[in-house]
Every structure is written in structure tokens, then in C-alpha cells.
Image 1 (cartoon, rainbow, N blue to C red):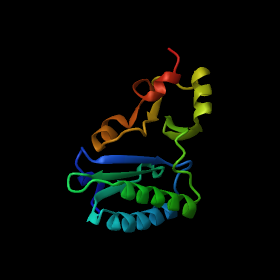
Image 2: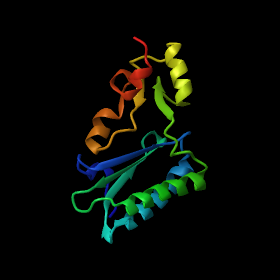
Image 3: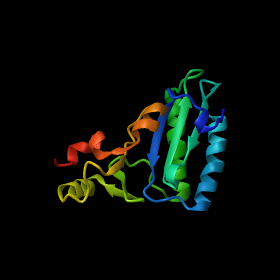
Image 4: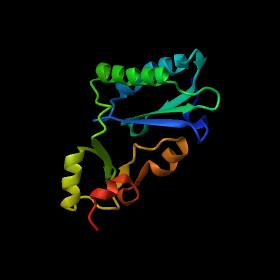
Length: 162
């Protein structure tokens, strides 16, 4: 069952997929159409799942699931990953590579391989104040409070020299 992302309770489970590049306006519309269809039909053991999504910065796909009525099963999680893989193929995107870091440089959003991010930290091109996207958040509450945070408050802190 498709619901507005904003209407999902704070305890909802969240999956954040970062793109290697911004979505074009045409891609945003195409992704919305496909996501509406997927989420409307998404089930676990025959039970409809109450879910929503958003695409912040036209750069991320964030899927949220209210598990209070029906929880995700292994098969339903697999279905969501297959959906993301289909988006990757259809729009020539990289959404599943977790070895990259997305962060803000001013108002610009940068996407770098983890190795380059480490080099930038060593060269002090980024600092603990650099806003990073912590895609390891698990709930909507964590997403709202701890997704866009200074590197010093995220797992990225291990690369920042004091």
C-alpha cells in the first residue's frame, strides 16, 4: 500500500540508496511511475506492505516501510532489491555500491569512492564539519535526525584527522 513518505511513523524501517549522479527531471518522473507501481504491489507473504518513498536532492532513493501492520520478509526485501537493480539498468544508475561516500561541498553534492574520500580527509580538503550523508540509518527517526550530519558525528569520523 503506497502512502506518503511523510505519513510513515518514525519507527518505520528505512533503506537509503545513493546515486552516482543526480537524476534528470525525466528520470525523476520515470522513477516515480515505477516506484508507485512497485510500492503499490509490494507484499510480504500475501500481505500488502504500507510503504512510501522520497527522492531527496534528486540524488537518493529512500524507501520507508511501516512494519507495524506487516513486516518485510526475506522475499519482500529481495523484491525491493530487484526493483532497485531494475532502476539501475533502466536509467543507467549506480544505486547499490556502498563503497562510495556522498557529502556536501557548499550547496553542491559530491559523490566519491571511499578511497578518494579518505585521501581528501588526509589532505584536509574535508573536515569534521563537512556534511555527509549517513546512509546506514535504519529508521525514519534516524533518517530525519542523523542522515545529514557533520562527518564528526558519523561513521565517516574515523577518516578525519583532529
